[in-house]
Amino acid sequence: MKIIKFCLFFTVLTLLSIINISKVNAQILPQGFRTSIPSVGGIPMTCRNALGGDVILVVNNSLNDIGRSYPEHRVIQMNSLIAARLPNSVLQFWYAHECGHHALPPPLNGDESRVDCWAVRMLRDLGLLPTIAHINLLISSIYGLSGDYLHLFGPQRAALIASCYASL
Image 1: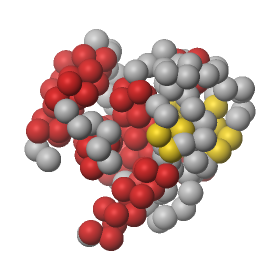
Image 2: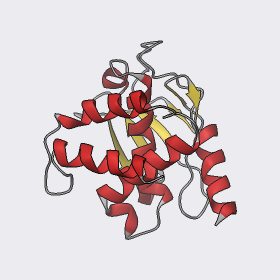
Image 3: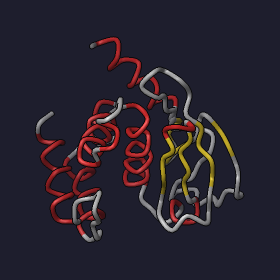
Image 4: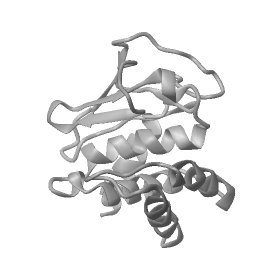
């Protein structure tokens, strides 16, 4: 279990660098840009699937959301137009969330609540959510989201994320 956590830790740490889709840099990346080691909020991050395979980040500025995962193709798509407007810790959460769809084995990778908790735990383990202020910024950004048949509504999702953070 410690080896798996270390591999996941190293994966996410590596995962945070070359693309720089952070609010600080507000860099809009070209449609179709691809990398396996993006810079997310100024931190190099990588993502590996449950079998240890590399997951590629592809910029898709036509997405109507921040990101989407395609575990069967080992691809995360993110919209850099939306990403450029987000605080670093929020952007890192969304990247880690999409990575969780790859890192967790089926059927766990389809459970949005588990994926959210995986993302919060990963960011906390990496030291990217070091204080309550960081988690509160994330919670406040999620609180207003509308839910759907897969995702909890904002207030419930924010409470879950706070609970995941507190349980570490």
